[in-house]
Length: 455
Image (tube, rainbow, N blue to C red):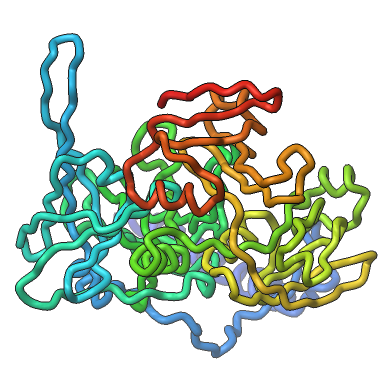
């Protein structure tokens, strides 16, 4: 009992001493710490004052929703099945294969635009609408140079059709949709943005291209399908992809709608393409070419020569001038210039701003008819009488080639195509208009030797 009392007494004394120590020593120390000036404390860290007040500004961007436009445009894009016969010389057998592509309905009575490579060498075309109705397709017009073709079906009732947009007004970063039948997956819609404009997908093929480049997914079967803006307007025909694997890896290319519309209208009205030209040749300016040409500008189109009797010569454009804009559109490379001019016809006028001796000038140029035509891998140029002493009566010559084996025939005169005598560029266009292809070309060397090329 005495031990318990001793233990209890020790506990009480210890508690009392702890209270006295806390009250008289610890509490005063804590009070002093609360009144210490923080600025008098040295710190290895730099304190940067900030604010947590956020500006009360709402975003100008609207929510991205493609549901309405997607539901609309899928009914204006068709599935195209092209039947081709494959001949095997080894077994002396033939078999059929089908190529799948897409097309865009551009009129209520059944006119359809697609890529030429979709319907090339076909033995039959099957066109299927989004509502699963199937028709036999007929080729109305085709232009291999632009890779565009026009088909016709005969619907019982008017069809929903695509309205052309102005591809010149499209902007890099703008939302777009692709509509087609990739990998035989009907009525597929994908979204992306415009990655670049006036893009030449292959600088080595001697073709002047001005594609709209997008990052919307495109695969085999999308060819001939629609590239549309968020208003559902047609701004391009999907044509090719950039790939190292054979499938989509990030970028696709579409023919701008202004070019598509021009080709469509020309083929329907004239049967061929009406090309309006400035009448100049030259180079796109870069840092390297600017240094070589000894000019300060690294953007624009440098004129190295002007053809006589063309709009450029009549407007007094000269060698050494640098074209900066055309109809207000900035010219950074030749594709910019070519893409805009391709949507024009002979007789159309364009506003050109150019630089001469450091001074910016403006002029209106009336486009003239092209004196060249591409056919069978050749660029054929018409030389008018009195323009070349070697051809006082005029001639057709091979000015450029896109096939290496034809390079030896540069500057040769063309006498006949498919056993038909040709005297001017219109004769060549008449042969092209028949869509028979090129079979033979009779040429004459500068030394006067004549022989026939067989295709």
